[in-house]
Image 1 (tube, rainbow, N blue to C red):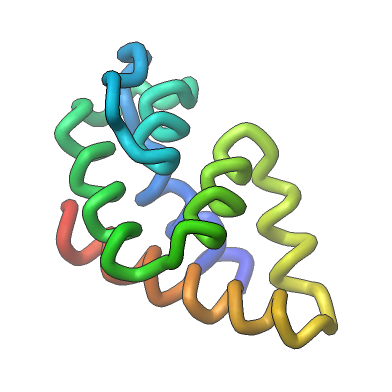
Image 2 (spheres, rainbow, N blue to C red):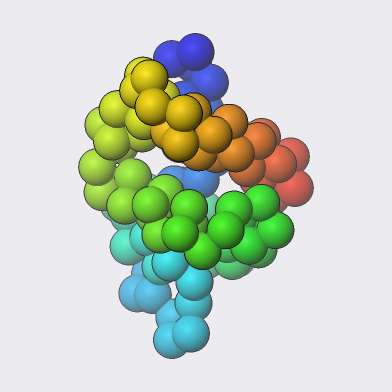
Length: 103
Protein backbone atom coordinates (compact mmCIF):
# COMPACT_ATOMS: atom_id res chain seq x y z
CA UNK A 1 0.00 0.00 0.00
CA UNK A 2 2.89 2.34 0.77
CA UNK A 3 4.26 1.72 -2.72
CA UNK A 4 0.87 2.52 -4.26
CA UNK A 5 0.63 5.77 -2.29
CA UNK A 6 4.14 6.74 -3.33
CA UNK A 7 3.50 5.90 -6.97
CA UNK A 8 0.19 7.74 -6.98
CA UNK A 9 1.61 10.85 -5.32
CA UNK A 10 4.59 10.81 -7.69
CA UNK A 11 2.36 10.46 -10.73
CA UNK A 12 0.25 13.34 -9.54
CA UNK A 13 3.00 15.58 -8.19
CA UNK A 14 5.76 15.44 -10.80
CA UNK A 15 6.11 18.89 -12.32
CA UNK A 16 8.42 21.74 -13.13
CA UNK A 17 8.63 24.87 -10.99
CA UNK A 18 6.44 26.88 -13.35
CA UNK A 19 4.00 29.41 -11.90
CA UNK A 20 0.35 28.41 -11.90
CA UNK A 21 -1.57 29.42 -14.99
CA UNK A 22 -4.54 31.70 -14.70
CA UNK A 23 -7.72 29.68 -14.80
CA UNK A 24 -5.99 26.43 -13.93
CA UNK A 25 -7.77 23.98 -11.65
CA UNK A 26 -6.68 23.38 -8.07
CA UNK A 27 -4.87 20.14 -8.92
CA UNK A 28 -2.98 21.76 -11.79
CA UNK A 29 -2.02 24.73 -9.61
CA UNK A 30 -0.78 22.46 -6.83
CA UNK A 31 1.12 20.35 -9.34
CA UNK A 32 2.82 23.39 -10.87
CA UNK A 33 3.68 24.87 -7.47
CA UNK A 34 5.21 21.66 -6.14
CA UNK A 35 8.97 21.32 -6.06
CA UNK A 36 9.07 18.48 -8.62
CA UNK A 37 11.27 19.10 -11.66
CA UNK A 38 10.82 15.98 -13.80
CA UNK A 39 7.80 16.96 -15.89
CA UNK A 40 6.30 19.70 -17.99
CA UNK A 41 3.29 21.92 -17.32
CA UNK A 42 1.44 19.78 -19.87
CA UNK A 43 1.59 16.90 -17.38
CA UNK A 44 -0.10 19.06 -14.75
CA UNK A 45 -2.83 19.96 -17.25
CA UNK A 46 -3.31 16.28 -18.05
CA UNK A 47 -3.53 15.37 -14.38
CA UNK A 48 -6.09 18.14 -13.86
CA UNK A 49 -8.13 16.78 -16.74
CA UNK A 50 -8.14 13.31 -15.21
CA UNK A 51 -9.03 14.81 -11.82
CA UNK A 52 -11.98 16.65 -13.36
CA UNK A 53 -13.28 13.35 -14.70
CA UNK A 54 -12.50 11.32 -11.56
CA UNK A 55 -13.07 13.55 -8.53
CA UNK A 56 -15.76 16.01 -7.55
CA UNK A 57 -14.88 19.63 -6.77
CA UNK A 58 -14.61 19.06 -3.02
CA UNK A 59 -12.38 16.01 -3.51
CA UNK A 60 -10.12 17.92 -5.92
CA UNK A 61 -9.75 20.70 -3.34
CA UNK A 62 -8.85 18.18 -0.61
CA UNK A 63 -6.42 16.24 -2.81
CA UNK A 64 -4.71 19.43 -4.01
CA UNK A 65 -3.68 20.13 -0.39
CA UNK A 66 -1.84 16.80 -0.30
CA UNK A 67 0.81 18.24 -2.64
CA UNK A 68 2.13 20.45 0.14
CA UNK A 69 1.27 18.01 2.96
CA UNK A 70 1.44 14.38 1.72
CA UNK A 71 1.00 13.13 5.27
CA UNK A 72 -2.67 14.11 5.04
CA UNK A 73 -3.11 11.48 2.31
CA UNK A 74 -1.87 8.88 4.78
CA UNK A 75 -4.25 10.20 7.44
CA UNK A 76 -7.18 9.72 5.07
CA UNK A 77 -5.94 6.31 3.92
CA UNK A 78 -5.67 5.06 7.50
CA UNK A 79 -8.88 6.65 8.75
CA UNK A 80 -11.81 4.47 9.78
CA UNK A 81 -14.36 7.08 8.68
CA UNK A 82 -16.52 5.89 5.79
CA UNK A 83 -16.25 9.26 4.03
CA UNK A 84 -12.45 9.01 4.14
CA UNK A 85 -12.61 5.45 2.83
CA UNK A 86 -14.73 6.60 -0.12
CA UNK A 87 -12.35 9.50 -0.81
CA UNK A 88 -9.33 7.18 -0.68
CA UNK A 89 -10.91 4.73 -3.13
CA UNK A 90 -11.74 7.54 -5.56
CA UNK A 91 -8.25 9.02 -5.12
CA UNK A 92 -6.63 5.65 -5.74
CA UNK A 93 -8.65 5.24 -8.93
CA UNK A 94 -7.78 8.79 -9.96
CA UNK A 95 -4.06 8.12 -9.42
CA UNK A 96 -4.18 4.93 -11.47
CA UNK A 97 -6.01 6.74 -14.30
CA UNK A 98 -3.61 9.70 -14.20
CA UNK A 99 -0.60 7.37 -14.34
CA UNK A 100 -2.10 5.52 -17.31
CA UNK A 101 -3.38 8.54 -19.27
CA UNK A 102 -0.67 11.09 -18.53
CA UNK A 103 2.49 9.00 -18.79
